[in-house]
Amino acid sequence: MGAFPSSSSPFPPLLEDEEQPPSSTTAAASKSKTSKKLALIPLVFLIYFEVAGGPYGEEAAVGAAGPLFAILGFLIFPFIWSIPEALVTAELATTFPGNGGFVIWAHKAFGPFWGSMMGCWKLLSGVINLASYPVLCTDYLKLVFPAFSSGFPRYLAILFSTLFLSFLNYTGLTVVGYTAVCLGVLSLSPFLVLSLVSIPKIDASRWMSLGQKGVQKDWRLFFNTLFWNLNFWDNASTLAGEVEQPQKTYPRALFSAGILTCLGYLIPLLAATGATPLDQEKWVDGYFADLALMIAGNWLKIWIEIGAVLSVIGLYEAQLSSCAYQILGMADIGVVPRLFGVRSKWFNTPWVGILVSTLVAMAVSYLNFADIISSVNFSYSLGMLLEFASFLWLRRKFAEANRPYKVPLPFAGLVVMCLVPSVFLVYVMVVANKTVYLVNAVLTLVGVVWYLLMNLCRSRTWIEFESSGLKEDQTLLS
Image (cartoon, rainbow, N blue to C red; front, side, top):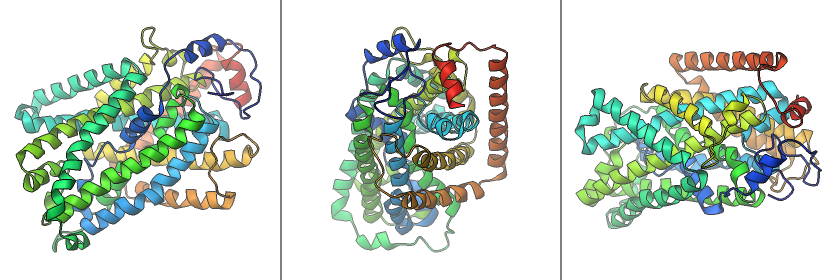
């Protein structure tokens, strides 16, 4: 990791050649250096699963606005949203490579209150998003096992799938990373076959369809679908302390994951919409399996259904890793008590963070799926607005800091780059329903109360801080 400290240090120095003062974290840092680090290929697939996980879930865009708008959306939206977010992540994750990611950036830019709020919004969006994956997994399993459709068997399936997937994460980030590689290859392979089989049947004129007559466009669903399928590029930043040579690895991993994500969405979408006549109202989540039946036969339908379950597993593992290491990073900088940063003695994984994320996900997983997604998008939008502001402020505030990767734009260009996706973020928040507003208002209030409670605990010394390490850093950062 060069001159930057390992993940056990609350904050990396701004300058690469800056000497670090001795602290009680030295021993922990030495231990961290001997731990297995995340290499490039596993990181690529973890980022891929943070963002996409395959074409599963993009069907609703066609149902909401028709083939042409869906194709244009997945072609243009990455340039409007995904690339700016990935560039911001690449610069900040390589300049400040510590567990906690965006929490560190906001804390560094605007102080502990906004670091705490960033942690609140992003963590809640993460664990709420996490809750959607066991639900999706059960929805695909019910195609094979109808008993999982409703009632107690469905709740039981969600419970056991959540516990099983969380235990896999507990065994270590390296295991999760290489598992993600295998799951990525296996879940994408049926779509590669689908695309190849579709070629002789493609009618390019079908791509130009604006939708069937009489079917109203649902722009809220359309943009929420695009947003949900193409966001969370910054989530892998919370793993920076566990990555081998993050200054070099992150830009390469983000670029590779970006190419994989765009092709993984566009190619199957072009194949399926071009090879089959449009029946717009059937384009809902899971419709790719029915399209596979029409295009190739039952064998490919079953393969895609199996791939969907594997994809959901990959999505869950990547999201849980991000949430758990975010909690670890928040414990390092004092946003949450040190207890939340405890690692397993066997696997060196943040088991408390994994446990907290799992429990919240289990509680939320029984909510309405649409409300889950809308709540995720809203709280994530709040966090991203703060993240873009932190990026611009850090570029100005620490203009001379060493940046292993630097977005090659002048400051005015950076403002424009952040402004365009910010307009979309505001739109996502404006079109939310009353339930989502209420949920996020309550969660934000909880975040403010938590920050005040932590300050009170520090002032009364109810929470133990390391005298030569964390406490000094807290003073400097405040």
